[in-house]
Image (cartoon, rainbow, N blue to C red; front, side, top):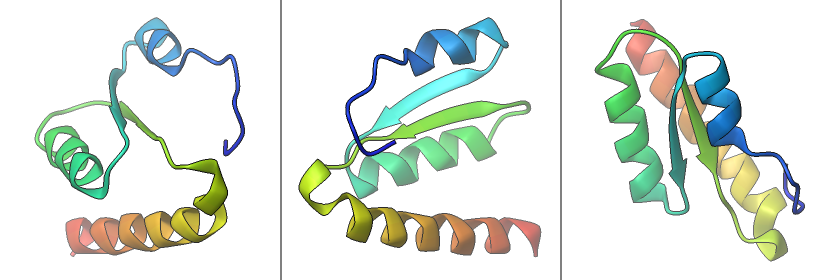
Length: 74
């Protein structure tokens, strides 16, 4: 989502037994990924981006996540 919403993602993750992290920087997102990869099970990571650059940052974030997943898969 790139617009304000009332979803409580942390509570939703807990409802399904998933860990939760919220990140508002690239460094924070990387750290959240490292923590998630280091443990078993599901982790929900909320990436908070400024609305004025959401499209650009969303594309960059998607690209980074895809690269990270490819590294993990190999």
